[in-house]
Picture (tube, rainbow, N blue to C red):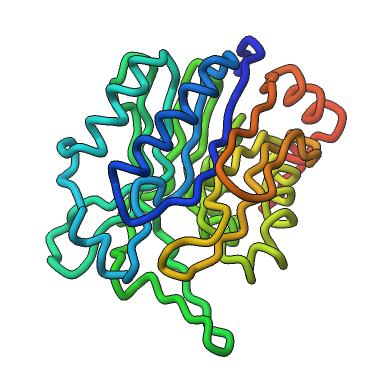
Length: 270
């Protein structure tokens, strides 16, 4: 799909346990991105809340389509005239002990366009460091989600999903892959960039990865390094740590040139 070149932004945050403080920080970053002519703005996973305990997010979960976080997203997208991707927010399920970790997309009029519920749940244990998302998160039931937009075809994913290349293959060709994340310092240092660049190269698509990046009040350290990568695997912009905005131009002609010169997608046999 051909589209005019445009500016995309990946917002990096170091979210805390106060929703209002996080929304204020997100709003400031979205405004900064909009002032720099961004048309597509991506927030990180858990942008609105990182609690002191894993169960804390259950207390601020919202019903799908209603709640202060979703209202903020719709109003902010409309006010700044950007397509806004909420990396993930906690949505209610039928369970009282679990939530869905859901990525929501709003157009520049504030209308919700897409929702993807994270299907791969992170688990990691090394010494005293241990994570098990399945204790509080219910995996999404639906298939991976890609949708058409003014910026081409976009594929949604969240964080740990990036380790499962078959998810991205299931989209069929997409122009942009979104990977809002909260990678740990340990796994990020080892694998973050190589995984993102691999997904860009093998799908010959742009990758926009907005991340959490710093020390959180709960003691967790997230790796940061929010980045935008082109279809050849080149990193166009990166922010190592702390709050900030990474921007780059997305150009459908670059996608077409890469796919024409190295037609790997057309050569697939499986």
